[in-house]
Image 1 (cartoon, rainbow, N blue to C red):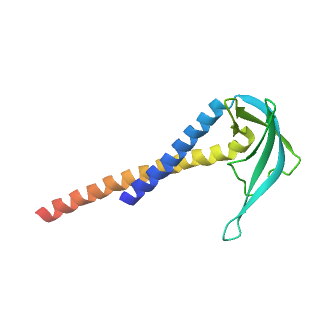
Image 2 (image 1 turned 60 degrees about the horizontal axis):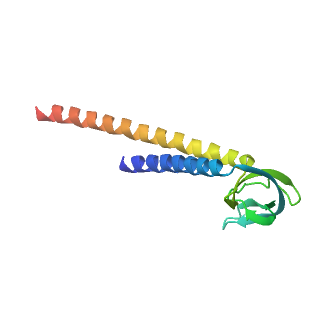
Image 3 (image 1 turned 90 degrees about the vertical axis):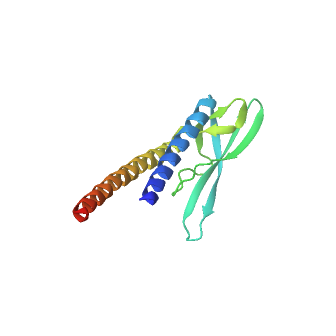
Amino acid sequence: MIIEFLLGFIFLAIGIVGLALNASVKTRCTEQITADIIDVFVKTESKGKKTYFPVYKYWYEGNEYRKKSNVGFSTPKYKAGDQVDIYIDPNEPKTIYSPKDMKGLKIALIISIVVGVIVISLAVKSYYELKEMNEAYEKYFAK
Protein backbone atom coordinates (compact mmCIF):
# COMPACT_ATOMS: atom_id res chain seq x y z
CA MET A 1 0.00 0.00 0.00
CA ILE A 2 2.87 2.37 0.75
CA ILE A 3 4.31 1.57 -2.68
CA GLU A 4 1.01 2.58 -4.31
CA PHE A 5 0.98 5.90 -2.42
CA LEU A 6 4.59 6.59 -3.43
CA LEU A 7 3.96 5.70 -7.09
CA GLY A 8 0.86 7.86 -7.15
CA PHE A 9 2.69 10.82 -5.65
CA ILE A 10 5.60 10.35 -8.06
CA PHE A 11 3.26 10.41 -11.08
CA LEU A 12 1.41 13.38 -9.62
CA ALA A 13 4.62 15.29 -8.86
CA ILE A 14 6.08 14.65 -12.32
CA GLY A 15 2.93 15.97 -13.96
CA ILE A 16 2.57 19.03 -11.75
CA VAL A 17 6.26 20.00 -11.83
CA GLY A 18 6.43 19.40 -15.59
CA LEU A 19 3.40 21.58 -16.28
CA ALA A 20 4.74 24.30 -13.95
CA LEU A 21 8.13 24.32 -15.70
CA ASN A 22 6.41 24.38 -19.08
CA ALA A 23 4.25 27.33 -18.01
CA SER A 24 7.33 29.15 -16.68
CA VAL A 25 9.19 28.81 -19.98
CA LYS A 26 6.09 29.74 -21.96
CA THR A 27 5.66 32.90 -19.87
CA ARG A 28 9.26 33.99 -20.41
CA CYS A 29 9.35 33.26 -24.14
CA THR A 30 7.49 36.20 -25.65
CA GLU A 31 9.34 36.95 -28.92
CA GLN A 32 7.96 34.97 -31.86
CA ILE A 33 10.49 34.22 -34.57
CA THR A 34 10.82 31.81 -37.47
CA ALA A 35 13.53 29.19 -37.05
CA ASP A 36 15.07 26.85 -39.60
CA ILE A 37 15.39 23.17 -38.80
CA ILE A 38 19.03 22.54 -39.66
CA ASP A 39 19.31 18.97 -38.41
CA VAL A 40 17.45 16.25 -36.58
CA PHE A 41 19.48 14.68 -33.79
CA VAL A 42 18.71 10.98 -33.42
CA LYS A 43 19.21 9.33 -30.04
CA THR A 44 19.23 5.53 -30.17
CA GLU A 45 18.66 3.64 -26.94
CA SER A 46 20.04 0.22 -26.13
CA LYS A 47 16.97 -1.63 -27.43
CA GLY A 48 17.12 0.21 -30.75
CA LYS A 49 14.35 2.69 -29.92
CA LYS A 50 15.00 6.03 -31.60
CA THR A 51 14.05 9.51 -30.47
CA TYR A 52 14.25 12.46 -32.86
CA PHE A 53 15.16 15.97 -31.66
CA PRO A 54 14.93 18.93 -34.05
CA VAL A 55 17.88 21.34 -34.09
CA TYR A 56 16.80 24.95 -34.61
CA LYS A 57 18.78 27.82 -36.11
CA TYR A 58 17.45 31.31 -35.68
CA TRP A 59 18.55 34.93 -35.60
CA TYR A 60 17.75 37.42 -32.87
CA GLU A 61 19.09 40.97 -32.66
CA GLY A 62 21.81 40.22 -35.21
CA ASN A 63 23.06 37.06 -33.47
CA GLU A 64 22.72 33.52 -34.75
CA TYR A 65 21.57 30.83 -32.33
CA ARG A 66 21.48 27.07 -32.66
CA LYS A 67 19.50 25.03 -30.19
CA LYS A 68 18.59 21.34 -29.98
CA SER A 69 15.06 20.89 -28.75
CA ASN A 70 14.58 19.37 -25.31
CA VAL A 71 11.51 17.61 -26.66
CA GLY A 72 12.03 14.45 -28.70
CA PHE A 73 9.63 12.47 -30.86
CA SER A 74 9.28 8.77 -31.53
CA THR A 75 8.94 9.48 -35.26
CA PRO A 76 10.64 12.26 -37.22
CA LYS A 77 8.36 15.31 -37.03
CA TYR A 78 10.71 17.61 -38.95
CA LYS A 79 13.39 17.41 -41.60
CA ALA A 80 16.33 19.70 -42.34
CA GLY A 81 15.10 22.73 -44.26
CA ASP A 82 11.72 22.97 -42.54
CA GLN A 83 10.76 26.25 -40.94
CA VAL A 84 8.80 26.57 -37.74
CA ASP A 85 7.57 29.43 -35.57
CA ILE A 86 9.02 29.37 -32.08
CA TYR A 87 9.13 31.77 -29.18
CA ILE A 88 12.31 32.87 -27.44
CA ASP A 89 13.09 34.56 -24.16
CA PRO A 90 14.31 38.05 -25.16
CA ASN A 91 16.49 38.16 -22.03
CA GLU A 92 17.98 34.70 -22.72
CA PRO A 93 17.60 34.00 -26.47
CA LYS A 94 18.82 30.40 -26.12
CA THR A 95 15.66 29.62 -24.15
CA ILE A 96 12.97 28.59 -26.62
CA TYR A 97 9.37 27.48 -26.54
CA SER A 98 7.75 25.67 -29.45
CA PRO A 99 3.97 25.33 -28.95
CA LYS A 100 3.82 22.69 -31.68
CA ASP A 101 6.40 20.55 -29.89
CA MET A 102 4.93 21.00 -26.43
CA LYS A 103 1.45 19.73 -27.30
CA GLY A 104 2.39 16.06 -26.92
CA LEU A 105 4.41 16.72 -23.78
CA LYS A 106 1.50 18.57 -22.16
CA ILE A 107 -0.79 15.62 -22.88
CA ALA A 108 1.74 13.22 -21.33
CA LEU A 109 2.05 15.40 -18.22
CA ILE A 110 -1.74 15.62 -17.83
CA ILE A 111 -1.96 11.84 -18.19
CA SER A 112 0.73 11.55 -15.48
CA ILE A 113 -1.40 13.67 -13.13
CA VAL A 114 -4.53 11.61 -13.87
CA VAL A 115 -2.64 8.33 -13.29
CA GLY A 116 -1.24 9.73 -10.04
CA VAL A 117 -4.70 10.71 -8.79
CA ILE A 118 -6.13 7.30 -9.74
CA VAL A 119 -3.30 5.37 -8.06
CA ILE A 120 -3.55 7.48 -4.88
CA SER A 121 -7.35 7.05 -4.85
CA LEU A 122 -7.02 3.29 -5.18
CA ALA A 123 -4.40 3.23 -2.41
CA VAL A 124 -6.68 5.23 -0.09
CA LYS A 125 -9.60 2.93 -0.92
CA SER A 126 -7.44 -0.14 -0.23
CA TYR A 127 -6.29 1.37 3.07
CA TYR A 128 -9.85 1.87 4.30
CA GLU A 129 -10.97 -1.55 3.09
CA LEU A 130 -8.03 -3.17 4.87
CA LYS A 131 -8.76 -1.14 8.01
CA GLU A 132 -12.42 -2.23 7.88
CA MET A 133 -11.40 -5.88 7.43
CA ASN A 134 -9.02 -5.66 10.39
CA GLU A 135 -11.74 -4.16 12.60
CA ALA A 136 -14.17 -6.88 11.57
CA TYR A 137 -11.51 -9.54 12.21
CA GLU A 138 -10.78 -8.11 15.67
CA LYS A 139 -14.48 -7.99 16.57
CA TYR A 140 -15.02 -11.57 15.46
CA PHE A 141 -12.06 -13.00 17.34
CA ALA A 142 -12.39 -10.75 20.41
CA LYS A 143 -15.49 -12.65 21.51
